Image 1 (cartoon, protein in one colour):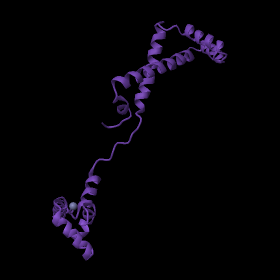
Image 2 (tube, rainbow, N blue to C red; image 1 turned 180 degrees about the horizontal axis):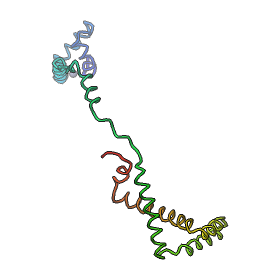
Image 3 (cartoon, rainbow, N blue to C red; image 1 turned 45 degrees about the vertical axis):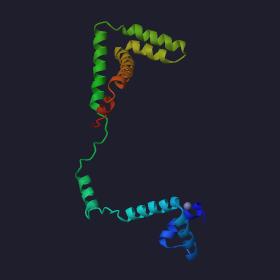
Image 4 (cartoon, rainbow, N blue to C red; image 1 turned 180 degrees about the vertical axis):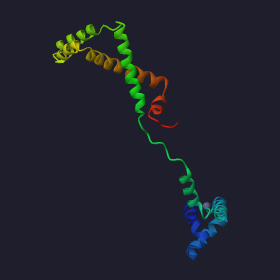
Length: 176
Ligand SMILES: [Zn+2]
């Protein structure tokens, strides 16, 4: 019997599962081969160590205790949009536009006229809307307010994403 055949039969040899003839061959090889003898000794030490492993038994009320602790924990906050923030933002934008137009900082008719000219070149019927808006000052303010809101939102989103990574979750009411 060579070393390969011996080492593949060592486990069965220790367990007494080999035939009497095979067991004698392994025994004879082990008597004359220090390498296989050392391997057999190592495997016997592993077997002995495995039998000494103590399994940890969980406490009888383990599951009940865990479930009770989970039940006692505060439920996570529901994600919700804080509408007052948005309403305050819209109101503030309109107030700023109204103030600027009252102070003649914004030339609303000129701006609306430019928008109308662009719309006409683009072949869009926005020119009619802008002419209508020219007759009604409130419509002018609304158009400018929407444009400024979009610009400010884009700026705020860009700046917030860069400098205030937690702003979005804070506005959405998430707890940190
Ligand atoms: Zn050997």
